Image 1 (spheres, rainbow, N blue to C red):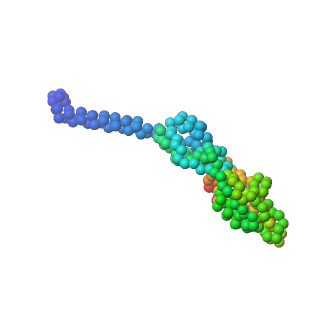
Image 2: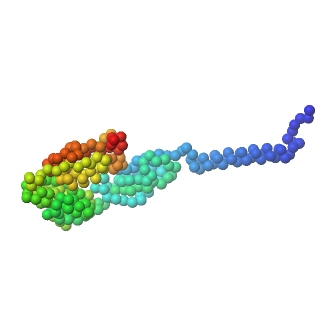
Image 3: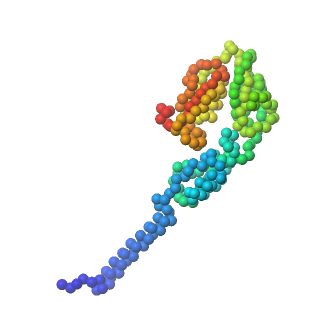
Length: 258
């Protein structure tokens, strides 16, 4: 029997070498694509919120990420110059050298003018202050013929006149009248609301915001922004004297809202 040899079949030999060449090229292309796309080498975006820019750049450089300031806001209860929000959010999977856009808390507080709300009702005063970038602080009630009539406006224990400049989101305390024939109010149901919305509802019902507590599911500042009330005390629909405290507990665990 004659021995088989590719030397005697040039077409078959070229065909086989062609297949080998194409297979090798596909393998090289696949390896190059994996190299350039860094397949299975994605990075987890860290949580930059509430960090100062020096720390942000150090963390980003260590992870081979790029950080770019896209915007700034002013949030009074946050330290100046720290990160307020980021995009992509913490926990996202990205490639090396990806740009992370951040919004920082401005280093220069925005100032607003204090209006006069003396003589306003509580609801009118709350709307006026909020429209001007301020918040209602502590409610104090004193005997008067007209319940919820604003008698004084104060800041840090002292009367504050209209026209004074304060940092945005500063809290203006109100001294209100209280007719003892009309001195109780219903506790609102604030379950499912964020802290800011819950607080506004409590104040609107002539009550003060007491303790604000977060459960173990709230791990960082970003969580606190999304946390909602799951428990309150006193319970909704209770009727209590005006000016009393309502305590709230917040979570990001949806199971606690069922």
